[in-house]
View (tube, rainbow, N blue to C red):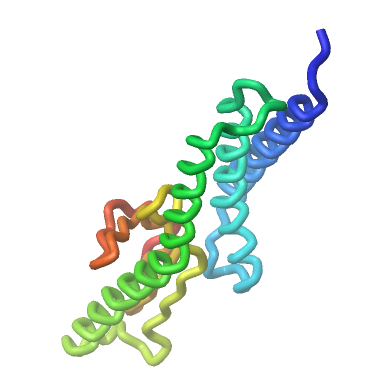
Length: 181
């Protein structure tokens, strides 16, 4: 039986990316890194690898498993759906990511102002510290964001947040902390 070269290459690429993604996730979780201790560039690379490689592995796996015949071209119907999905992802990335970042910054600044108004001794000159490192659409309208904030000496968060962007606003649905203070 002859196996087409495209199929072997596709399977090998998918398996390689999937294996690298698993290795990066295992190493990343075992190193016990906290992004504030890393430089900005290192944090960006760390978060990109932690989010991007599993997403890439999933996309490649989906492409490999959704092929009926690896040599034939996709039908016109699926090409139309594919374009629509790509357009929805692009709109989410272009407009949703900044909206999610703005909303998380707005919430943090509002809470910081509330803390500052109380006269707390834990609010120092170095506060507030706000950073958003990555915002990635996982499905159209749903984004995973890695962001951090430190509002006073014992009030901080750094981690992943799942948000729904629905053009008129943003709804935070889950937060997965990497560090808390």
